[in-house]
Amino acid sequence: MKVQEKIDVEVPVSTAYNQWTQFEEFPRFMEGVKQVEQISDERLHWVADIGGERKEWYARITRQVPDEVIAWQSEGGVLNSGTVLFRPLDSTRTEIEVQMEYEPEDFKEQVGGVMGVPSRRVAGDLKRFKEFIEERGMETGGWRGEIEGGRTVEGSSSERLQAFDRGREGLGEPGRGEDRGPMP
Image (cartoon, rainbow, N blue to C red; front, top):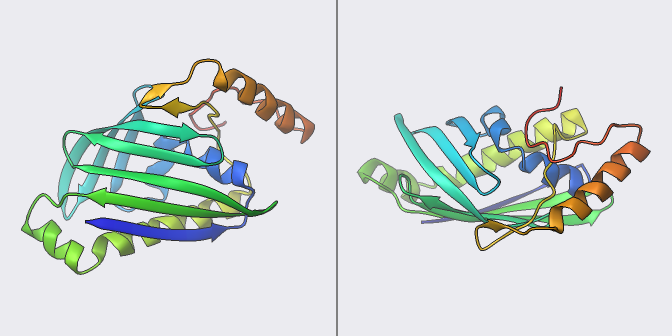
């Protein structure tokens, strides 16, 4: 089954993208997501409640380009893959588009898919993300590295991180480095 939803958020593309890289924050705005653990730059462990059942799986980030795209593929468990696209609308607004494919595991998930439950869930997650980031006005952290073919691209992140840190320092904020965790 396929899901495609998008939303406009009232923050610059770098702010929206940086917040999305904070995977461990997903339970704050994603319905049913109980925990996301960052195993490495490329791997995540998910725990979610789907249709009243606890599901766990690993996902590999297959492509990640700052301010443009994050794509993933599940590794076992709930079969899913997808892409999140970030498009600047102007200097203060960003369109976020989620494209996702998944394989329903049982009859209940098949019926939910036919009834549009996953699309409504993703639309709700995007709405909660919008409220979260717009209320804060800034991200809780950011990771500016690149991933291609499921592997971190060496050398690309340090230049981007330095530019990211310089930009933040110019705004009176300390640089954040490669922190993927919440900021104090």
